[in-house]
Image (cartoon, rainbow, N blue to C red):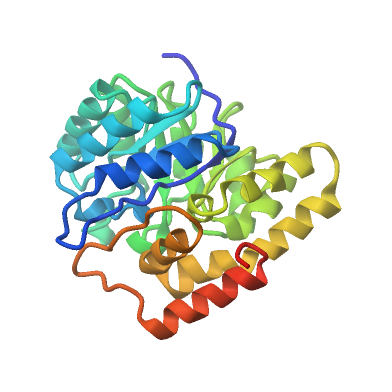
Length: 298
């Protein structure tokens, strides 16, 4: 299995829905055209901000196929294929591979959370990685799963030949330092929130999968560009300017807020899928103000 090096900014792409709840694949194609012109390292289909939990398997595979077909040449395509059971995760990952995914981002199982100890998670990820044809990345997102993978598990799994990295969305910088210290050489440690982007770069992290990249892809990339050319002041300035926007579209307003921001900035966010609710008029006004203060909107 060839080791993949993941670098740059990658959006966990929003899934636009029509008002009737159907996936709007044409809107996704429109967004892809804009993202293709931005400075991105690749695309994540079926992330948390994609409302992947609300998609059918057929919709997931179709979204992946559309993305693969529209993606700019040379950009890595990741697919979120984590399910609650090992069997279903392997099945979906194999289908994602057939649809053109380069690697799979796999969520920690969480329904029986009190039983998801180190042994269970190491066994789960190892069995999946042993039985799929594309490389695997661990997805640690405590906000949604209430599972936080341990450094011991990361140390073990990072040495599996087909587990090539991990997206850590905890935003916990001390934990990121610990993961980096124990992981095998060449393991792709990826930050999973823009709130930790600049600090992660200082630790040697070279990739970020972040909701903010849906709406400010080039700005997010410029943080890394400036940092890597040694202009730390400029990198920090852009990062601090974007920070309130990231808080708004993640912690404060969530996916509905992200989609409204996307609409304001020329993308097609579409509707959220029930039971999520759209932002109200007051929230829309607040989001506009946040974007204006961040110099993203006139």
